[in-house]
Image (cartoon, rainbow, N blue to C red; front, side):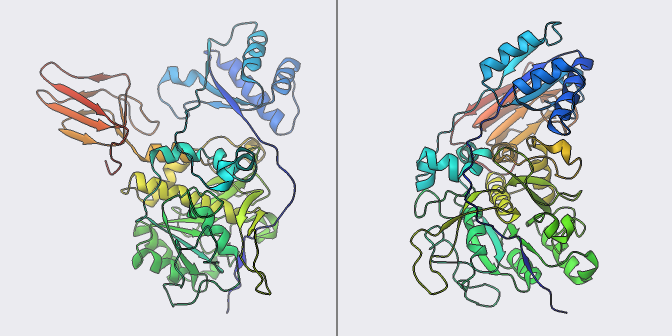
Length: 497
């Protein structure tokens, strides 16, 4: 039986989006009853919009509070359980003033304003270089903190991202010279008149900082294009023959796991066993399998696959599918996308860009971030990559409307790449003589996934750390007779722990 492959298609729209700015503060409060009520009322406001308490209702509405969540979710340290992150759409100074008036009983011990890091790298692509164009057409990069991730790594050209799709305009100014001309599997010409792959590959890692108009999250990562016939075979080749470490899939061809033969399932699993991450679209709502899981690249085949849904400019889960197998959300509405440079009559298209939506474009953005993560730490395996992406996710504004159906939240490139580039020392006696790492965290509870405990330099030993940034938290000791030397440099190398 011949399979019908379904695009998670772009749909061009003409509505003009508003620039979205969301602020945040961290609240410290030992009064768990007060904070739990704050959380419950905020969630009610975001979801059903029914509030029992007038004071909470007024405050939440007046300050446009979007979400409240524990700052250190999963922590086992008691005092860290008293910190809460609040996100809102209001002038920060006005919010703080209103909060002080609201908290007349002084249930809040202290409030910390979140510091926004300053990015130092800006690509010179047309849409990025113009602030109006950037906020309008490349809002997704701002949303994902792309420039902060690029401060850590611009990606590695030896890191290959495979994009399997229906066709690619290899002459497009955002692709020309960066993508292969023919399918490595069978030599078929990629430029076949279809353009879905043009948009997905440009979003994953098109030419950035020169060439076209769109800046791409994957930056220097390489792109290898494959036409989507025999997709699983081509994905397998991409991993085992062409040494691609990331595969981006923006299509599906079945709604039923039983349609996927056992050998194809084994091939998908072997790709992941080989250390190649698979990033796959989750579908665009009820039109795709009734909004349920789509196949063959699905978590029901292998849970290491990263399944992607979408958000809009306001950080709301957008009109894409939502189901328990979704892992993460990424921007996927009204984003500028590359299209063919010639029309059906072979006439030249002078401005080959359109506004589009769909998990088709959300997915390659996640794939591009995975490319950056592997550039920062090539030792990561697909499961570790998935765990980092989920662990470093930020809140979705309307997540409470889709409990358990939109994954861990919305992806953040900076947090994911930094986590990938960090080496942790916790609950151990460190005898390492030299540690070369981009970021180093030392001390108890440096992450929520590691056990608590004292970190100490081994007796009568010397430990040298060479890194861009070193964070030393509590429960760290250098005993008498031992020595610790820390050398920080903004050019400290990335790499495996």
